[in-house]
Amino acid sequence: MDIMAMISDDVLESIRTRVDIVDLVRESVPQLQRAGRNFKARCPFHQERTPSFIVTPERQSFHCFGCGVGGDVFSFVMKMESLNFMEAAEKLAGRAGIEIVKKDQVLGPADAERLKLKELLELAAAFYHTTLLQSSTAAAARKYLAQRQVSDETITEFRLGYAPSAGDVAQRALRKGFSRDLVVKAGLAREAGTGLRDYFFDRVLYPIQDAKGSVVGFGARALGEAQPKYLNSPESPVFSKGRVLYGLFHGLATIRKERRVVLMEGYMDVMAAHQFGLKIACAPLGTALTLDQVALVKRYAGEAIVVFDADAAGRSAALRSAEILLAAGLEVRIAAVPQGKDPDEFLHAHGLPAFEECLASAVDLAEFQTELAIAARPGILTPVEKSAVARQVLETINRCPDEIVKAEWMRRLSQRLQITDESLRLQSAKRGQPARRGSPAPSAISRGELAGAEEDILVCVFMQPHLAELLQETDLASPIARRIWQTLSSQKPWTGNWALKLRDSLSPEENSAAQRILLKVDEFDKTDVEERLKSILARRRTQVRYEELRAALKSAGRLGAAEMGEYLKLTAQLKGSPKS
Ligand SMILES: [Zn+2]
Image 1 (cartoon, rainbow, N blue to C red):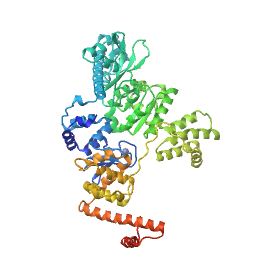
Image 2: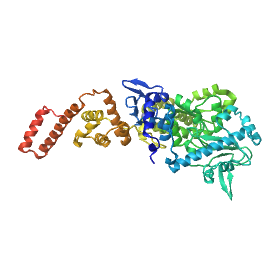
Image 3: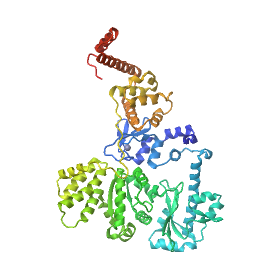
Image 4: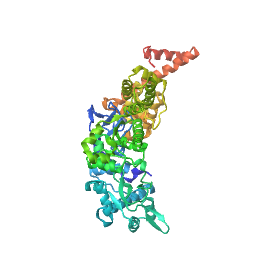
């Protein structure tokens, strides 16, 4: 289904004219700086030290030469906030004061079901929340939360709820007209004989919200003796526990601003952190961090601090999480909560400043592992033990995608072990390049630079797309340049924003080259483009023909009279010093 078809071109166009991409990007990337006719910053979508993220006001587009992402205001919002096109359009329309009339019938069946499920879960969350606040049956739940020192503000902010022993949600949903099938699919009830039976009984509920704030499921803690003590909603079309982070939505504004997150273990830890004002705290839902969650973090932050409870299980979970965050290119540090407490207990006992001290003393992965490995070998390290520690830590160091960080870690490790840099480097080299575990680091895409003449040709064509018709395939030597030319030609008659359509049809590598050319276009003199192109082409064709004849001469040892004459003429034209 074509989602673009749901919104008229007029509406899309008026969004494009009313929302300025520079203003929009700057809200999420405050360090955006003017660079000539464009704006530049470090890319919000991948980690980098030198800015390769370019925003071009003239074309209302952005492009990153490091990771290849790019597009218009819609793509930016989609990427930045992980929205689909429709959601991004709605958001931008709201910002521009434009009303979008949604046509329900155009929604695909799966999308329509997801919307319905979210509506139903929203209804359930509201019911559970009101029950917690008002019902006499929820007295024990309120008492439990008070004991855990959860404030009224936190209860409201996180929309905590209570599922009564009597169970009522399924019946309410049916009465409101939701189908039986949908109630089961949402994970609110199970089929039980002739009727539906609520999924949650006598439990405190923690609604799980996705990054946009939609309730997608619930975490639930038993108040009585029911087992298991903690229970999540079953997986559904809108809920997958490996894809959401608890607390992310509530902290999103701050996380975007600070570009960092603090990862904790449980619901209570996250709520306590937010209650004390540490809004960048979030947590996976009782499982080890997944690659999807890491991708989610990466959308909003470049740095993560993994906080763990000081027991062995907590430590190894933290280590695993930190490793996949590192492999994904995030800056990672690990912090232990002192005195064997979890963050929730520690915050309530010592307050935020003490907790922030503990965050400030967080160490990076290499240091964490070094100290762990050394602590496991009491006394003064023997040379054999030093070698074992080095091997263990080198494995982590070699997985780090950033060469500068790697070098720094090597230097520190050799210092800590009191061995020479040189012997450590040898040891590391001897181990070769170990296979990367976890997710491979995203490889930087090629710079997308074309040879001079090819680039000049395409610059002209990009200035006036109809000139593409003057070109022949042999005018361009590289496959990338040819693809760009062919794709551009296929977009005749180049109305509207053809540059954006072009980007959608090209591979990342081709795009990188195309965007580079578009940037050049901005700096070029726009007069006499056609004449300029014609002279470049003429020279280029002369060159190509000359190369052809020269190759023939070389292989056959001779040329026919006419060809020899042509060859000599071309040689003279090219001043006898042809460059290939
Ligand atoms: Zn990037």
